[in-house]
Length: 320
Image (cartoon, rainbow, N blue to C red; front, side, top):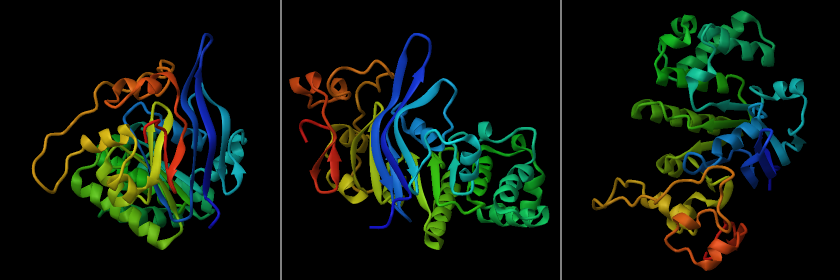
């Protein structure tokens, strides 16, 4: 088996203040191999984005990694010096953030922000960087890249800014792309273009993708494996076909039941009752027990472990 591009081991990320510590990512383990697309799914508040920020070492000041490792090609990124991490970000590991307006500098032109990474990581001239920037802007759907380079972020729509972010993330051809809800701000046509572009890049290189999304349609279309998170923990992980054909965790089943289908008869969607508990207010036992229609006494009393039920299919559930 090829060496993993990324290995996350027993990762626990916490928010701290003077009085308490809140665990937002709780002991998760997974790995991503070369040319693999792994989807990380779950409701808002499940810890998906905090997992990505932990990998990138871009946590807010009040947060820190309390335990675990994040290894890129064998190198542990946890505790790495900022200068060393800056050499990896953009060049080897890139990220598309969920909200492009807060990720782009409002006082710098698109061209300045796009060429900065190209010049720093690839060591090319300003003219060559402009040429490469234009090539990537064309690839993400801008017919007049030179004009876009001269614009400021506030002059672009949300979808256009997200495509600029994709061009920035891909401009140095990273080994690993972390895409945090990359199609949320896009209309259906541009969303399809972005997904097609990511597929093209996967064919051209051994790039791997961690695709963070709540859109199970995108998961079915893009991913090879799926990780389902709930309340900071992994509750199910398997290949994408097994997840859709035979989900084992009640939470995964709930996500699928609340997703509209394009084929077959019209059917009523079944929402998951309640909401994700806030960090630090998790119930004893299974964290999903209060929302689970199948919960038994053992579910509320004893925390289930993530275990392999069938080869390659792990589930955190007493009843699986």
